[in-house]
Image (tube, rainbow, N blue to C red):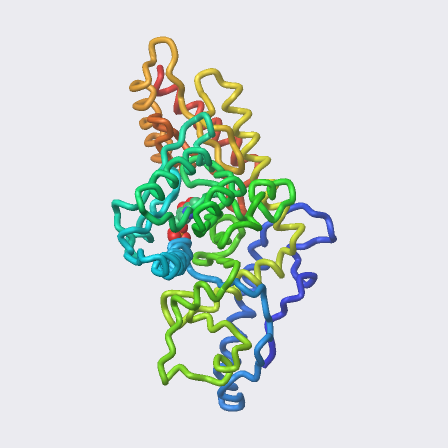
Length: 409
Ligand SMILES: Cc1ncc(COP(=O)(O)O)c(C=O)c1O
């Protein structure tokens, strides 16, 4: 027995040290899968000669103190909401208010729907879930002055502002909520701030995108999902919490049948106390394999080349007067549409875009998703697959132009 070969230099996907992104080639994939099958088969063959338990000690393979890898953003939100809820109940109980119906949570109206679901699961009263309107003046990011106004009104009404979810890279249009300014507002009310960077967190492995997280050192938790944009298979969401005990204090269970010396020693955070379930998959392994296989420079190049391809597509859209880019592009998503102009009304344009999307998707050659931003039906062109190349972007754009000409003829 032994370990799989994890030496990055043995992988032919990494020629020399030039930082050009190249996905694994099919022959490498075949070779790795053969190795994995051999490993599993050898394990079964030799199982009787192996100890029942591993010999690892607390600290082996230690990562950052307050980190845990979960399956989904929803779970990351749920566990932090529960921790924030309990802390707020505890705090306000000491001044005589300890009823969950007093607690309020906040997010921009562009926040992923999963936040609103997680709030309900955590027991917040739906009447106390504030969805704050956003508009083109902030490129659909949360306006901290509006947040302050709403939180202050709630506090004045005797409610307890408890949790704010800021998103870096919203699903619809990749809007960025200003993390630092939101943290400052939340601090005035002692509210927990969570940053949902499910998609765009991956971009922040590149220094040039990290400013989107400015102020993150003042938040309570942040989650990002390598399954979105960091070449890792579903599901894999990393959650970092400033103080892991704030989560484990809420979620800890200690039945007799789970007692063990390692947990009792206090040297480890038992990961069952950082999640909803007890059992866990080893999701960290696949992320670790991705990081070892590609290395930082190649992963950065993957992000940069996707962004460059999205920019190329955005330039194509700008250059064609039939179209408009609806919100400025931040990462590798372009929100665009056939625009209303001349005889084409906004309603006509919505319908034309819907037909364009349907006709294009029916070809089976490209796939466009849609959203509604500022009451407009908007098409979303996302670059993100490891196999995407410039030629695919060019041919998709040609197809979009051709399909548009046919429906506008
Ligand atoms: C910004 C953001 N947050 C949350 C989610 C939901 O993620 P999950 O399915 O991991 O709960 C998504 C999914 O698209 C997302 O884009």
